[in-house]
Length: 454
Image: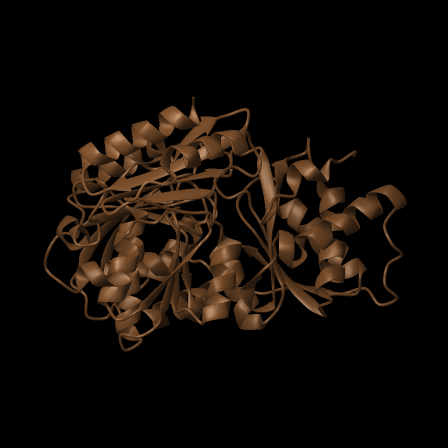
């Protein structure tokens, strides 16, 4: 096929429509390039439940084996299970998934040994260039000794490792509704929750990459509606929703109300700091709530603010030796999980915190949800730099505000802040705002949107 790699190689992964934008032949070239760029003797490969995933994953494995690399195939897995295998086996890894994207999409998330990220600046550009060259010139001759393909089961070891990091032995019995969205949570949750004092009410645990019930993207409120209704109907203590590859988790309380991912970040940060003697660095991106750095400081830790995006979080985790990191998109990163993100471990922390006291989840998380937030609001604009400059001009020079350019533009005052940052792939500006109360939030949000859309 004729492939336009600029359309499918993103900042952090490969993602596109199958077979229109990529297919098994291209996957095989990516496997060979991944083997060459990582220069590894062996790699580990896994895949999700999408109909195209097994054949794409196998083609990638053959491409790597063509270059003399041994391949350990772990089959069906969540993305964080693949990271576990990469860390435990100390091998580079490739996960075939398109996460929360619709069924016709698929992709590859790649990492180096120990689950270290592969992104635009850490190997993905070189992989793309190799694939482009080989599309034009043809694949290289196979290695004199082709690599071997073997299989390995990692699910139970992955589950045991997660349970070793959070003590749930003494929690009170809890009833939890889990919406797996027909994604990989339906594969991992039964093993991770096995033996815990939990009554599990499963929703959409059947693995089905066509997503017959709703898209596996809990960031879209429409996809949480079923869970929000089911939790109070069951009299459950909480609900948890996972995205398609089960690396992100979203939480709803006993009333069916969504819990802010920033509140979960703050809650887990407090627990991880307590586990580390009240010391440690916690990473948060710049659109998480102000609650997060406040809670980190109150619990003896040091907050470090980063740009949005997992490669920035993981880089700061490694640089600072941070014990934990969180993003408002519900990605949660743990030092004890090779600095990789795992929504499942965050979910276990929530269960442990809730089960370790007698109150409802709504009361528990209230202390970690101190401000009102807008959520992310996207505006289509023809001139991203021009509109950002207009926002800067409107606030620059005011004595009561500060401006910074860490990622787009952040404007902050004593009781509110907002960030405007451009999309890397679309003509959009993304606004996130937060304030001490709803009236202030509405005022600041509407002011910023008027300038952005002006």
